[in-house]
Length: 239
Image 1 (cartoon, rainbow, N blue to C red):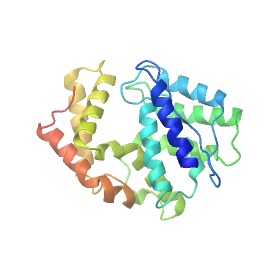
Image 2: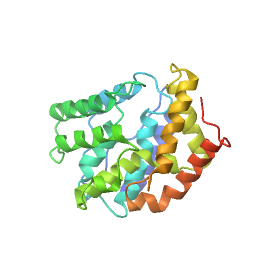
Image 3: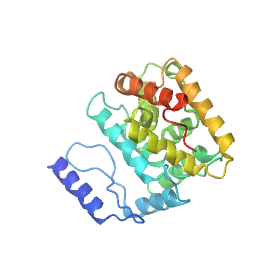
Image 4: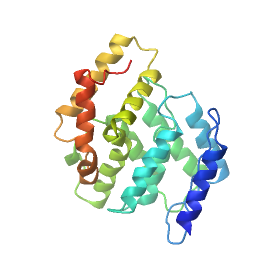
């Protein structure tokens, strides 16, 4: 019943969405769930954060995609602290200004501020903020940077949820690459492409792109094909 109700809610949100006014379904329903449901005030504040400034990729659609990966993990390997990871995914790009170095810190601060104003008994605000701040180090982190504990595994899987687009089908990956280029349109094209190629090369040179075995087994091969194609010119770096 919970699954059917959620499906109906999602379809209704899509039916009522327009190009300039997207509608989303947030929260959790059904017996046995441990996730909090966002209240209207919390969701409105979060929605407003993601709408400013206008974004080509780091909007709420990206969050929805990371939550789809979250649900896949929840239905399989599982999360040791599901509420903390769920909230971290919701807020991880809430503050996003291309080129700024403090987006992740400010997003973490916003999450903590909201949790103080609208508390969740099951959430650890410190842990939520810790996870969000780690997203600033994508590509530089290694699986061994985190302990072989349930919390460490949560961390690896959380970070992989955010990076999963790299292992998407080629068309989706190309759309993502174009969207990032659009967000950085104020940067000179030659400089943007140089830095983007350097990031892709760093990922390819690493022992593994995805930190958890769950994501590595499923997405690593496709991610490497996408990055290699982009660097080889067959999927020319967007920008």
